[in-house]
Image (cartoon, rainbow, N blue to C red; front, side, top):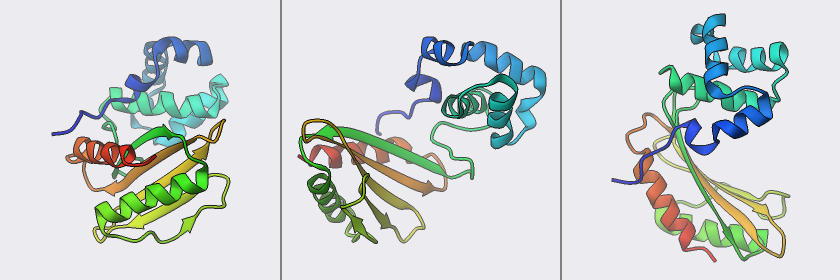
Length: 179
């Protein structure tokens, strides 16, 4: 079994939430409960945080996902549409084009699937690998300083969360094979 998938709160601490939004999670969750947000759609919760409380959109999304997870509305790794997604990333000493080519070669070898397209010239190069199940793997690369790049993999459209930890473990191994 792979490493457990963490919740939204595992990635960003309460101090950072308070600094960015003026309140910690418990305070936001109490306000959301008071407003009846447990029965709202995701976009309505995030919109309420932005319009009624002036929370930056990125932070509103984070607070919303954290609230949904804390109230059992959404599980870790679950997307708005109910499917599940796992992502991993690391930094390599390659430029973006070389990093994407290397990452795509590893994913192709591991999945025995060619990417739909290999866009090495975009600002943030990507390659998408469709799977027969309707799931997909997306390889992404973002430029960093000094000829380095951040490489990432996302496995999306999983019907449930039963494979999240194992998928993350596999994708981490694939990233280690690059650079």
